Length: 324
Image (cartoon, rainbow, N blue to C red; front, side, top):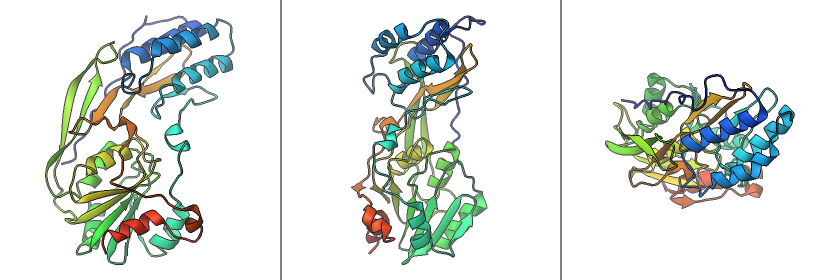
């Protein structure tokens, strides 16, 4: 059975119900809400008080929307979190250094032309084929749906093969339910896979409402060796999928560390109608590793740009070696 992760409702207001709409009030509300609800200050060694002291003098009533946005954007950037955004009518704040600072190690065109080929199967968001008696599944987004029958037919197609390669490189996330549902098709035993906690108090280390997630194999599974391919663009639900799969002995992760994103974001609205969101939970492996910082591979392998230009993906080639 797929475990459905229950999202927290938006936090109760930490301020008056009808606050004044001014730059200083908007700054204060944003800083205080994040201060009381954000999950990863301690993990990332962020001094939020010091950050306030730096940016607060830059805010004054009468400043333009663009100038205020620039200050709030810069302040939130210090959280180093792809789940943190400020949304205005004219811009979206973000910090995407979790992948921009690293090589892609992936070329979708190479995958389609030289590995999937021209007769691969497409079922929902699943794209799959067979390469040298090894199943190959490329899944580009956990926002893309699939049905139980899509999964059953894929598992039937892979039956009797040496193994399966699951390629989730540059998959930026989506539905956690899809992460659980896909993982259930490639595991061979019931295990605890994740533990999560909500931010429950104003202190930076006040967490509660712990939930433990166990996963069992589906009724129809590929009961063999699996290689999971990852890169730094694997984020959020894809990071969780990688974390789940890392618990199982039949799975080997090859590529680069995932980009992270282990907190579920909550959202709220400032008096000026700008929306903002940030991580308000923390998720761990059963060994207490915080998955916010990403999941390292079992085998690090880079993709060579000159060889990609020739149609050779070194990460897929290294994965195929696992079955020779």
